[in-house]
Image (cartoon, rainbow, N blue to C red):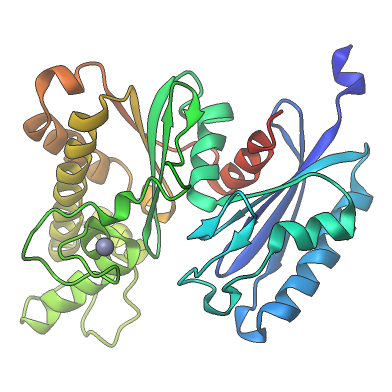
Length: 316
Ligand SMILES: [Zn+2]
């Protein structure tokens, strides 16, 4: 009965390639989905104009009035003022007051938060981490994003810049990362890094049944597929990725003793071999008491996670 009067909300996930919008009910169910290409090369003004048109379009399609808009965007960003700071994925968006722009146009409450944080909230509300009061989400894509949910609440840090798991260093003398540090997990285990590591192996003279030359279209997804088909070099790359991720996760497990680690993003496609190696490494490296009862699982909401989390962040 209560559902008959419960309002709807709009969740938005802005990515470097696509912008996803979804009308979501008060229980976290996505009712209408709409996606537009980001086309970031057009420049921020055109992208934002198309975003506003897409919001207008989907709000009109909603069967009930929309009561708030939650937006996830690549960080870093000022989540209190709702300003995009300097996302590497959307370089010309520096200083865009996105919250204000959308609020002014639609006269609705708007929140802006880091996209990975919202994926974590989504998985914690409706996905793989549904019953966990503490969980760490890792999303493995171009970079590595993360979210820390502690006591059922998102921990975004003293000034909103927490959960930069991608910059946990696993090697003091490792390769230089874009952040200035060395040996960050992102340099080894993001989708970009996985493809780079296979290319490096080919350059050193190693051979693969699937990838003949560094000029081939080498992607992380392709490597996982090749590994499943038995390509030895791809399998080794997947195995090492699991080792690197497991070592980084062990640090987090010792520090936070969470109930659950949820892994989402494209790399979740690597499936069981990667997950097994991560679990094995965490077992070897994390303290026994800190890892007791720990669950390491793959995210369940796929591309809806950010939209659902954005609505949760509105405080419903
Ligand atoms: Zn780094």
